[in-house]
Every structure is written in C-alpha cells, then in structure tokens.
Amino acid sequence: MAVAHQNDPQTIDRLLAAQGRWAVVGLSNNPRRPAVRVSRYLIEQLGIEVVPVSLKGDPVHGAAGYRSLAEVPGRIDVVDCFVNSVKVGAVVDQAIAVGAGAVWLQVGVVDEQAAERARSAGLDVVMDTCPVIEAGRRGH
Image (cartoon, rainbow, N blue to C red; front, side):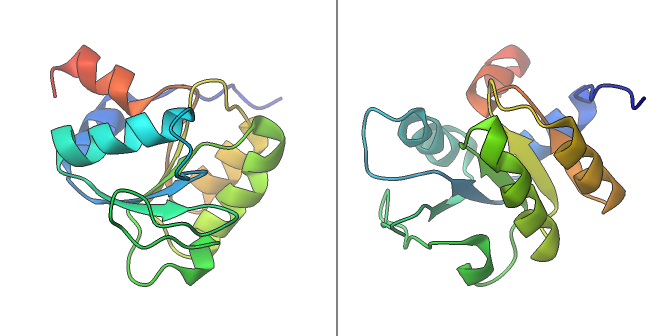
C-alpha cells in the first residue's frame, strides 16, 4: 500500500516565495466562494499572477478567465484546486498534460492516487492545505 502524502515544508516555501503564475481552478466571481478571497491574497500579498479557470471561464480580479487548463496560454507554475476530492483527479491529470510545475489541493481536497500520478510525472504536490494558512505560518 502506498504511503499517504506528506506535504514538504520546503516545497511549500518555494511555491509561495516564487511569485509564479497560478491557475486557480474553481475561481469564479461568486464572492461567497473561498477561491475569491484566497486568490486575492495570492495577488495582493504574495505577488502571484492568478489565472482564473472555471466552468464559465469568467474573468476575475481583472484577469481573463478560461474554461480549462488546456485553454490557458503560456506557462502554469501551480494549479491551485478549488474542486471537491471526487473531481480533483481530472484536474490533476489536466495539470500533468499541460506541463504545470505543481498542483496545490486546497483544504479538504484529498486524492492520494492523483497526488501520486502528479509526483510520478515530476510535479510538486501540496495537498489538504491552503496557501493563505501556509503563508501565515511562514511569515510570507
């Protein structure tokens, strides 16, 4: 049996400090959704470029939105997953297909098999935590 995923603190530190380009899957204009608050924090506090990805492909925070990771032009450093655990495996597979550097599964989002597929494909994996929480713990 595979060992359960353990988040690597150095990976988290590197991803939060890199000021990369994050595709936030599940980011819409619904202000009640946590993705809106978290993505604003990424932009305003960490200097991260956020690319919204949602079923409608709505623009958010002044950035063009897309309906899938495959539609996003250019490089994606991190795919931040605001989808439930049942659906996240497909998002992780898309992240692998587009050559993303990492997947970040939000609090409560757990899929050990998807995490293993991502690691095997060379992606960094962070699971079941939030960048806002992790940044606060690390003083970012």
